[in-house]
Length: 157
Image (tube, rainbow, N blue to C red; front, side, top):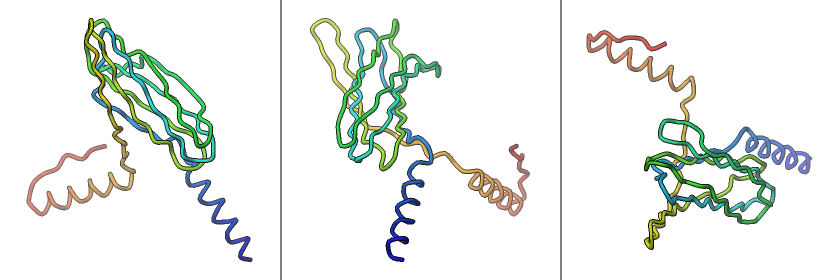
């Protein structure tokens, strides 16, 4: 009975971590002449991970996509070009799929101009999308507060 219970917990915890890709976003990345981005991925899990690195320009257009498989308990570095005809801000998105805990991800922006070399390390911002339930609660709460204050509220649909 004890083994069955442990097996059930193992299966449930594995399925909970396999619900979809883990996403890390690096906003404010500078793209310009002589630019490159190095993405460091540290997989502390014993399971392999599938990593997709995507570079987006400031208008939301996907510029580059690189996919790699990271073996369990290993570290890799992926380099993508951050060159652009005109300087602009954009972002880098890293999708991490696989069993177990997500990988640790960081990026280093590298820019060279003549004899000058600049390196900027960046850590991710993790998006937390709101659930439909959270949005309904916020709308209900706003409506209740507004009615109490005598203000009219436009409903969002």
